[in-house]
Length: 320
Image 1 (cartoon, rainbow, N blue to C red):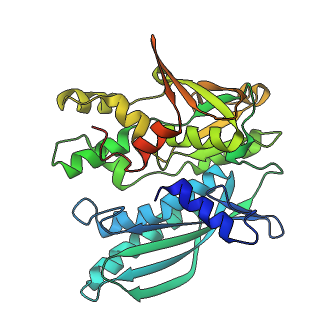
Image 2 (image 1 turned 135 degrees about the horizontal axis):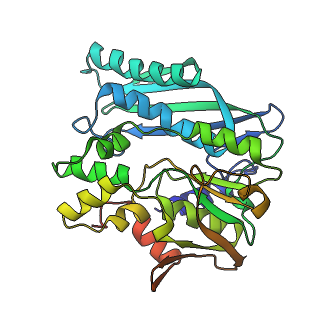
Image 3 (image 1 turned 90 degrees about the vertical axis):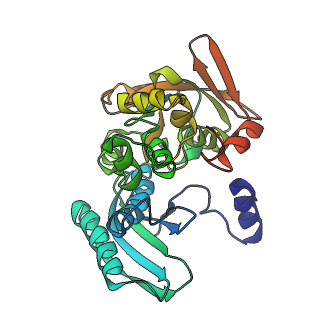
């Protein structure tokens, strides 16, 4: 079953699904955002490609990335951990050392959680953020003429994972992008301070094209980008050249960069630093069947539903 189909079933099964749709739910009566992500051993990570410490950091960071996209200030997390009965005390100690270090960095408190037994390691984090802007970000807020902006660089994390899985040499930058991602909390707070209307924001936990397509789908507007305007680190290009790979596949379809994709009107765009929020495209007309158009010099690729599902269902596994 595909993710979007699963979400539709959930919506149709609930009497009230009004809080579903974005990675963070905004609880207006409490003035907070709430999100939850789960990492499962041999699905989202393996212990030969990461350490307990980095797993703890990543479990928190992926949730903070969702709060960054909600333009909120993270304040609390709770942690649920399921482990086999053969797990060592040192694993749990290192895991929570990683959790603690991220929490110290962003001044977050751990409120509790749950511990259970299981056949594999499963760590689930619920994160709560405080609303600091009078305006809301949602993937459904993109409008015709909006500028598409992107933080950071793309493709590094998935290239790092590819290197780890295939026992290839890769620069530490690529490896660390995969095992120790940095949520764009600072950038989210900059946006929260700069906006004067609701905007569309989404993190790229599942990839650049994934975020663009989901914004297009939720907003019912097609989006056009120039792939050559997307920031790419030379270390990714060099890694791809050495291993005879196309770095643009990592950029477009590789996940877990945890950057922000932003759609804002011109008056907001003009007040943002292009060194932080890099313009890569525009939002097009309202569309019954929204798509993402990717320009690459004299080539144009149209990402429709069929192409999106083909390349995102199995994520990066079948793309190289």
